[in-house]
Image (tube, rainbow, N blue to C red; front, side, top):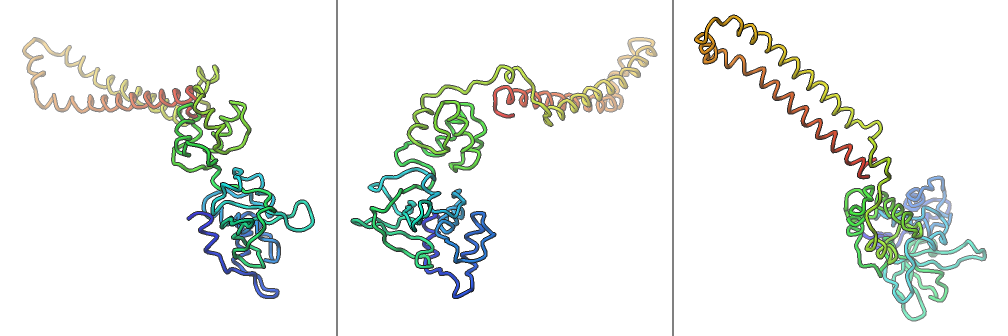
Length: 310
């Protein structure tokens, strides 16, 4: 569900009668990190918007001030506003006060807002559109961009920003971190949003450089490298031990053989062949363990030197 859909499901929710408090509204405060609020009489329009955003998996400002949404998301012109965008208008006599809601529709000179704390309830009310301080769009994606979140994630990964993680199409904390790292490297504003400037920079950007000391270095305190080294050591010890154990009786048997016929008989003896095969299977297993450990060790070091991992 979108934040707007979630908001519509709360229509009709009201503050508790008299001194009583509605636990549904108190939960909205808690969702945005303000579980200290004990009364639903505390202004809750921003808590309502934040709660709906968080329930949809989108980080809100997590503040109780309506005007905090003036710097959230992406600015949208009034002519391009859509249902579900977030509108902010002034309220009260102080410069920090305001009211925030989800845009339901804009008709003529009026904006219809779906919000909380509108007459102590969640409902749809109209306000003069001339009072709008701003309209912001959820999702942190500018409507003018052509790249999807998944495409941005893949492009960042191709450029060497492996901290983006899996290209899942979600603008989560790892993707925002990768966007910030890219913006810092390319002198863009440090805002984790997908806009035209980011899109153009991604298209023109070259591969992320890797520091020389990292390109020739080794990962520190790597459990994979440590485990691989241990496996290689155990495997070598097993191979040497097994070969040594088999070498002694082979040499002894060779010295005891008096003529070529005795050697040929020993060679063709089925029992001797089967009993002698098992140790060499053990040697083969140790060799496989060593080869796998060497491969894992090399891959981990290569990932470190290419910047894929820390």
